[in-house]
Image 1 (cartoon, rainbow, N blue to C red):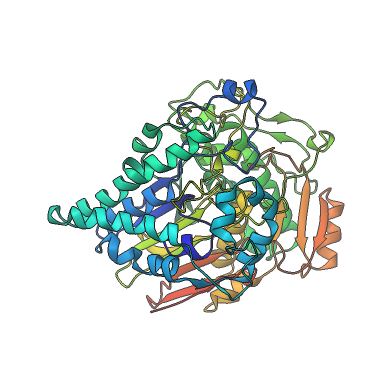
Image 2 (tube, rainbow, N blue to C red; image 1 turned 90 degrees about the vertical axis):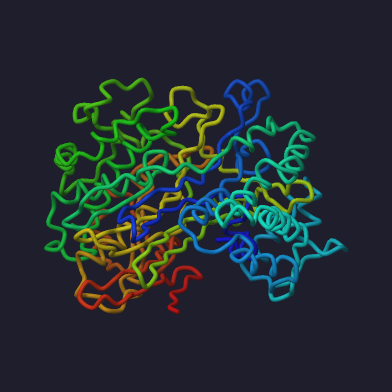
Length: 548
């Protein structure tokens, strides 16, 4: 995570967020680490409306506390074996001594030159001293970021006598409570952003129980309802009521069924999910098999739904019986007008996400989806080299919404790693970039693996190369939360016959080029027969599978 936050800042930087699932073999359970930053105490809906501000994804208005460093060091503290100095050494080396600029990173810099003009610190950080751009392949150095990481190493060394874990905590505390935090807050105050030192000092990466469901013997784990992760779980519960294998992979019937199930899951996401510190989501009901059966009965096998209507999970929940926030009840979303959400938060800049799936020889699993703090939108805070996350763009400035902005709340985040156990044993770690598209990608990749095993085994890459589809039938998580009701993107290798049949069923389908639905699944699984690790990487991005 640390090296990626240095050399791939078009995807993620150390000022962004890091959402992690871990499965320590010794504990035999999955744990969530929520490295999603929160809004400052001074951030209220009234504060924004009084100043005629919104949460468009650049600058300091949508800024939240950086969460990735807290998450990474929390995992290292509790489950690691190495020091922060050891795990950060390569990241510091690249920042201090330089690294060759990737073409994609160079393109992101070029696409943000106008943004840099508003923030001179970003110009100094990303451009040459004469103001010109680095070309792809040229060596770029980030000395201020190297200095910040080195200060954290110094704090760890000073606490070394207290033990490895205490040293990691000391490094983390210097970032959130010490001189690094003070410099970040001084810059934020200079620019009238509503942050105080205690917004950093009191921040923590939450450790919590993940949400989970069982799909045909596979126990699937996601971050809970502060994320969009349970969309995958509810959708799997709905699909368990159908014989997908008999439909044949990527037939019109198969695609129609999974898309209609996703529509139901997204309607519930946009209605019921929010920061669990503020919102009591009816999670038991949403993930109930009986509720899923009720939702599955709404799927018309021959007609695409244009409605966007939440269910009533409270009827299946023992704790939550009433709902005080907005719930979707749109009979025909296609009449609502307005532009559709982007597949990813790309608006003339390059913003993205990365993913890391690891299973070691003992069966320990680390599955992380870091993102945010991008070149496109993140302001470099003083001389720290830290680009401030703009994940606040996933809040709603609407007091009727569960996912609304509140002081010290965390936005309902799209980042959604996944771990799968089979018969209580580690089976797979999987994830992807892609904003709202993440769980659609994971759903299709997971179904390819478990429903159509014999079609790809043992070449996991093949399961990820198969053509995919993408619904936009939801309110986009990114500001301004546009909706794309009934829109469906279909990758070109899917046959004309299937495409026309989807149109005949009422989907507003668009043909897109092969492998252009740009989320990219990366996964490692353990072959139940041999115990061998099999890794797979999606060709839609710069994804890699490695063994060592």
